[in-house]
Amino acid sequence: GLDISMTGPGFAAVEVIDRIPTLLATDTITTVKTSVKTVNKKKVSTVYSDGTRLRKIAVKLKNFMSEYGPADEIIKEASFHRFKTSTAQIFKSVGVFEYILHEQEIIEYAATSIKKTVTGSGTASKTEVAEKICEYLGLPLDTFEDRDDESDAVAVIFTHLIKKKLIDWEKFEK
Image (cartoon, rainbow, N blue to C red):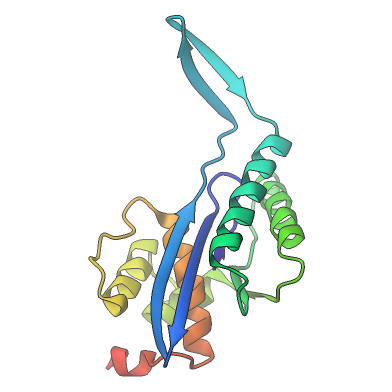
C-alpha cells in the first residue's frame, strides 16, 4: 500500500492468508526541502532539489519492494490536491512510484472512499481510520500515532481487501 507525497510517502505491506490479514511492515521517508544543521557552532541551511528528494523516495521504495515484494497488487490513494504547486509536487512523486513499479498492477482509491470503507463515514479523521484498523488487527490504538503516512498506506490496502471481500470485515463490523 502507498500513500504518495513529496514530503513523507508512506509504505505498507500486508499479507492475507485464509482471509486473515497480517501487517508485515510499514515505513515512511521524510524528504525535507530545507534542513538546518549546526556546523562549528554556526547554523548552516541546506536546500535539497526536487531531484534529490525524488531520488531518496526511489531508493526507499526499491528497498521496501526488495524486502516485501513483489506484490500481487499495488494499492494507492488517488493523488489530487486543490493547490497547483502541491499537485505538481505530488505528480512528480507519482511519476517516480510508477517508474519503479512499472511491472506491477496499480489500483487507486479516493480518500473519501478509503474513509467510508474503513469507518463507514467519508468524513472520518485519519485518527479514526487508523484506530479502526488497529482495532481489527488487535494492535494498540496508538500504533500509528504521529505516523499518518504509514497508517494511510495500510488503510488503502484494507480498503481494497474489504471491497474485494478478501477479508471478513463484515463479521468485525457487527
